[in-house]
Image (cartoon, rainbow, N blue to C red):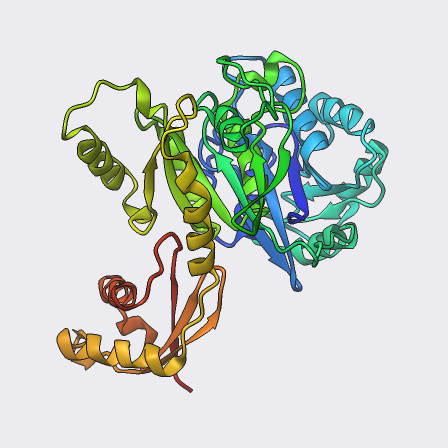
Length: 435
């Protein structure tokens, strides 16, 4: 099962993105004191007291030029549809507004936990201002300050109390992979072609798929579970007006997968949303395969595939480890290669190498290219060890983490890849000072 999903809902300019960034631990969403300004990422992961969860910043979902009332309604509806826990955020300095009441009325319809967070309460010694918010009908309001990070611990304590137990099926040894990509790249057609049957409805209208459809099959003794990413779940044009919603849905599939197949449309080339979706798979530490669909539709020369692959490598530099497969759902060209390639990437994603072999490679790398010096201080690497898999994560113990320049870290990763087959999987290198 996937991680619990927490949605942050509220009218514009109550500080949703600030809180989102605080919990995520990094500046992900664009923050500006202007209503409706969020245009960057809307999905990330958070952790509190050992509980991991996914987060949705609904302020990041744009509804073109629709009035704010319709925008707020759409955001709240998405939260009701997707989230396990909803954080309803209001502005403590402005009090209850008509827009807050509108959001509240929508949230009354859900059976999911709703936690009321009163943001911009910078003076915690006097909490009298928050009592008016009891009238919204969601129990105790939690005063917080996004600007100063106050009160977030109490809020997150309440959030994780409402997580239902999600257990994995330990008897399921299948390799789970998802097909992710923007609408109308041919994901559903690929599902049908791989299975050899019409398992899902296929249409040339973007956004046909309404729900994530899990399909199991076996090939050469290996069990696979395939997820066709749903672009949309609810009916209504309000969802079709935003590509970001399909990105959000893709995240659920990525969380549940061992390997993500990033599907590109050969006819249309690479779009910005392709890069955004691929970035989530990479940052999620999943195995990655780039699948170029509709390859049969292009008029090709002897250099067409080479040039297309070069374009992918340029646009997706952070996915240099990902294999590329050119396929056609219509003619089934090269589709027979997919299961074995998925298995290979999954094996690499789960690979563990011994500390002795790893340190031999590290020492050879240092001998070929000595460690750098910064302001007269030289980086010293003592030893390295792999601490986990999925993805392979290696800790390098040094005299000072500040001396490890990103370029040398990348050099070490490349040397590791030269000796060990980690194709299809990211590698995480963590630098720690030896105590």
